[in-house]
Image: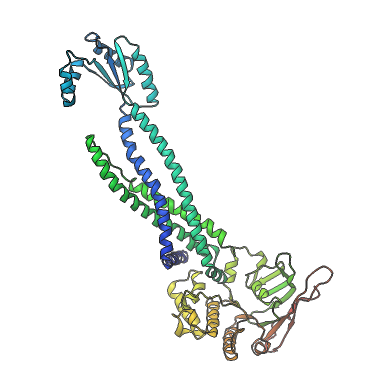
Length: 302
Length: 246
């Protein structure tokens, strides 16, 4: 066991020595891989940051039922009761917004205040706001309810307020597939870069490999420094890519913060959680070692 | 210690470099393999060292049948055979002691023990003073001695050397041969291929002679090698039989 650990320590030392022996070449490789890895990392940051926004809104989708302006007083309350009775499991809250309160609310908005003053009477209808319970197939259930309520007497319009959230979700789904394809392409770039780096190293270490075999080195001993080279290069490159992504998100967040403030909201792009980043570093390191293994197996047959 | 039974060696579909070679070398012998260039001396040594596999026949080295040895087991056999090839194959980007440490590193020996053994090996070949020097600063004879130190540091049972004195002056060549003789005296079986019959006759206890072969076909086969015994001081347990009418 100790002997194996010593051999691993030797392989690691040799790897670091080889990396340091060609600093420019090593650095260029690291940067190429790091820049390639930064792209899916930034993509993941966008998706991860947007996902809670979509999820937060989509769990409380609302249907707004607007009554005709000439609907009799009390019909809104009657319809609200009917909705509660017909859909007790599918609704979480049903509340009536009388037209007078809606007008009063609108008047508090300075932009509407002047326009409303010139109107002879209240143009707004009574409205019922229905919060739907989250669950399977929410979008189609909401559509079905809206279609049914539209046919009720006194109902003028039923509006699904969460339509934009569904569009955002569809967009995020598209983003996730795009990110997956991007990650796949980047993986191929990493594989190819590590493969080539190890190939060049194996060719330049030809003499050393020959001597090691001559004095009784096993193939595992010969390959080990190259596996470390692949894993170490990928680990360093992933760490650099996290740094690059962090630096890139900083100015973007400044700009987004200004935009979000105009909507009286707070929104920030953030990197995936530390745990996800650690898993990413380990996965890319394993990918590097795998590519190195493949390369060294092909390029040390002499 | 070393046993060849009807060994053939050819590359691809080409002629036999070695054909129907049969001999035995006992433990502690000092054998000299003579013959002109291209006769197959280096190939013979590589077969002993497990660096090449025979095309046909059976080879036993240090109690292990090479043809039955798996690829994974082969490196462990190599650790019991110290090999010095015609080109010293030193690592010029490492120091003298680092070159000698390599065979010990592959076995995973503790650093302090390995360093002590590497220093002892350098001491035996007279290179202690230059352990931190790069091999490029050594003379031809010193580089050869460094290659010997690297070959013996693992305390091999067998030492094989291909033309170790080829490019050296007479005095240096004698010093190198004395080093081999010293190891042979403590029981290391030594097989050396060389052109220098006169020098080898002074040290070896037995000699093999390999003649250049002909193209091998079913109608006309060649004599691959013949054994001679220039020094009667140590005859070994059995007369070597090299080749025959192959």
